[in-house]
Length: 308
Image 1 (tube, one colour):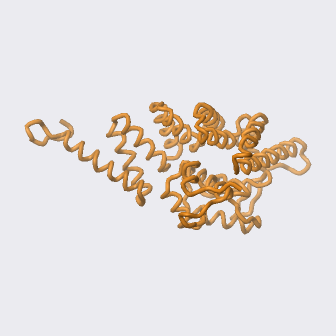
Image 2 (cartoon, helix red, strand yellow):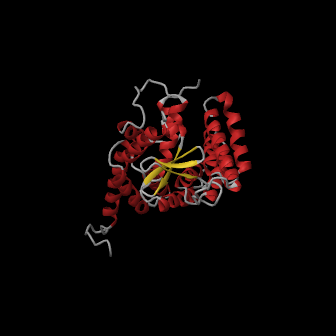
């Protein structure tokens, strides 16, 4: 069985150490010793948490709702055995072709992947509804199997083939596009990764994580203007997306646009004030502010107003 180091998890999922530490503090992820190794189940749990973070759901709220789902459905790990969907201020969980609200215990058949994002109640005996529900459940089972196949190098190609099979059945299956893109990204097949991430953004234009990942691969391939556009779209969709603010600030600095970077450094610090990344953002903020103060001093040494 493939094992992962802490650095492997951070690299594969593009996570920052301070985010992983926050999830550990909330009990959403086990706090292992630095030298310990992680399993594929840990990787799957982190992937689910990463998606929830992109939807601006707090760690504390995730903790409460995951606990509720595990009690209601008898699950050992709701983050791995189901997929979370934001519904208003709460999470629902896709499981067995249905959406379950763990607090109200309401259940509805989920046709979000087959009916343009609409949630419908299917009456017993309706043949079209049963057929659609069966296909949704089959796709969910295939997707879960593909995620498991990512566990080891020897089954990675099988995972790729299964994701591709899912996309043949349902071309706009955004999660399959994201996962397949991430495999390609980690294999440094950046053109293929970009294609998958773009496909995810087209399949679900409200999917902030897809735009964030697209920004990352565009940044990696030195398409900085396009990367900035992707990060800005992710932030427009989720204004509190801290990681997107951080990466956007870096991109603006590489373009020499310090003032535009400043706004996003300051936003990042407000959203995530603790940890090494926050410390770096604060340092960059101070540097830019110092440069801006120098820029409003005249050559003779007389300070003038910024509006002059």
